[in-house]
Each structure stands twice: as C-alpha cells, then as structure tokens.
Length: 206
DNA sequence: CAGTACCA
DNA sequence: CTGG
Image 1 (spheres, rainbow, N blue to C red):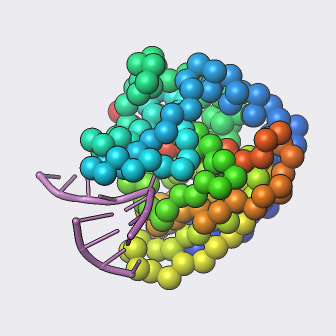
Image 2: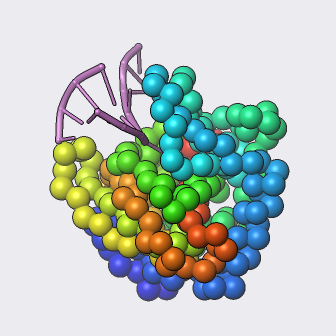
C-alpha cells in the first residue's frame, strides 16, 4: 500500500479505496444517515452553526452544541444510539492504525460544495496513543495542516475521493482544517459535496 | 478546571 | 493573526 509522509506522524495514502469500495462504503453511509440523520452542530457559547453537517457510527459520537464539545452514546436529536460502524471502516482502521483495539467513534462529516472547516485540533479524546484515521469520499478537498501550536506554519494537500490520511504519534494533535472543496471534482455523490469519516479511540482501553 | 471545529 |  503506497503511502507518503506529509510530516512526522502524518501519513497520506492516496487511492486507499478503489471505486467499487467507495461505492460500497457510500451505500453503508446512506443507511447510517437513514437511522441517524445528519445534524447541524454549533459552536459552544455563541451557537454559531457549522457549515458542515454530521452524524456518527459506533459506540460514541462526537457532537458540539452551546454546551461544548463532547462524545455521547446517542444522537442529539433522535436520542437513539448511533448505528454500528460499517465493516469496511473497521477494516481500514485495522490496516492503517497500528493500534490493537477497535475505534469507539466514526464521525461522519458531510460537506456541501461551499462548506469549510476551520483549523482545529482533535483533542476531545482520552487516548492520544491511538491515531485518528480519516477517509475521504466525493469531491476533492483542500486540506490544510500545521503543527501543535495554532501559529505554526501550515501546508496544504488535496484529498481526493478514496484517499486516507492518518494522524499518529507526533502528529496526533496537529491543527488541521478544510479550506474549500474543488467543485465538480468527483461524480461519486450525485449532488456533489464530500463525506469525510474520522475514526477515533475515545477512551483508554480496559 | 477551562477549553471557540465560529466569526471579525 | 488573535480574542471573544
């Protein structure tokens, strides 16, 4: 499996999923969004909505509302438990994470063509020994990454449908975000847009 | 215990 | 970029 180090601990796997695998994963995600509809998260304190909508699979899901960021076992609107993670996603974690326990959470972010994600760190977990594994589906995204401090210099790379990226070791807590999508860059999603899955181990293993 | 994946 |  070809891979490129973008920075120490940050590894890029171009074309990790071939087209048939992307289509199978998309079908599984449609089933998840049927059980657990996309919701619009908002910023703590201000209530400013995100331009990205999200849902989750797995034991825990990441949510954000006026009260803050957290992981919780149920959907914020339906109150039901999150659907199971797709089998494919577990296989990707086993292949890419080099971590001996399964992930607790699969955050599913849906980007409409104009959606963005500001620079942030994934630091709401307890277990930073486990990496974060990210899978991209649909339109190409301009992904920006920096260092452990907000002011550190940044670089960008385009993430295309089927690409994977792993944030591990010294890159586990780097700042990263999505500047924009490249319109019309994929025909996987009929209406355009992008799905991003991030797999995380939230709690310390028993 | 505080912490802004937002915006200005 | 920083602060709210």
